[in-house]
Amino acid sequence: MPVEYAPKGLVGLLTPQANTTVEPEYAILLPAGYAHINARMMSDKPSIEARLVDYVDQLDTACDQFANAPIDAIAVGTTGASYMVGKEREARVLGEIEAKRGVHAFTAATAVVDALKELGATRIALASPYPASLTQAGVRYWESRGLTISKVASGELDDSQFHPIYSMKAGAAGALLEGLADDADAIVMLGTGMPTLGPLLEANAHSKVPVLSCMLCLGWKAVAALAPAQTRLETWIRGDHWRERFERQQLQE
Image 1 (cartoon, rainbow, N blue to C red):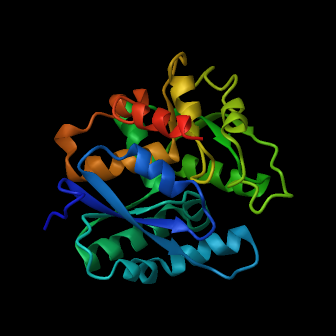
Image 2 (cartoon, rainbow, N blue to C red):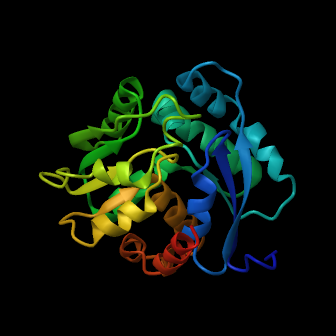
């Protein structure tokens, strides 16, 4: 049953517990007629890698936070968890959630895979905000999906902040993109905690290959799952429906 502020679709969005980027970027990205409600994936594990695995272990329980809200899809706002558990377990857990809850379920990583298929891109360059160990886990994940990694750029994270990735500024995220377009079909900005919307608009204005982010793909996938005939990825990459909303938000800062 449609709800007042989401006549075209309501997305249940799962966000890592300390993430400050997923919700605001998703609110900007979703087109008119779509909305989301958010729930947090929680873990008390001491390391980022252990927390990411814990999120997958408890993913179905996290979905219980949506109770009987009439959601049409479940979007899991993390890529790192996919890297840690691998594509087979990822597919199994998502399949179990879909069978139990009767809605589409996807992660940011599977959304990126689907977006790259839509573009026909098989050779990609990566812009990663992660520590080296998690970046390498990501490379292995993307290669397991049949993709070739042409180049990886990693950022210098500030460990003095509450969370190095979530504290990253858009300018630093954009700087990672320099020189990645050579010998690639597309560039992917990894991580749902890194701010990507400003860098995406700037890069796609002049890049010779499409530049995607995990959050852009997570928003696109939700709408593509609910209205596939009405969703063209190219318009998302250009920011046709979300550029003005993003720019208004920037003017308020």
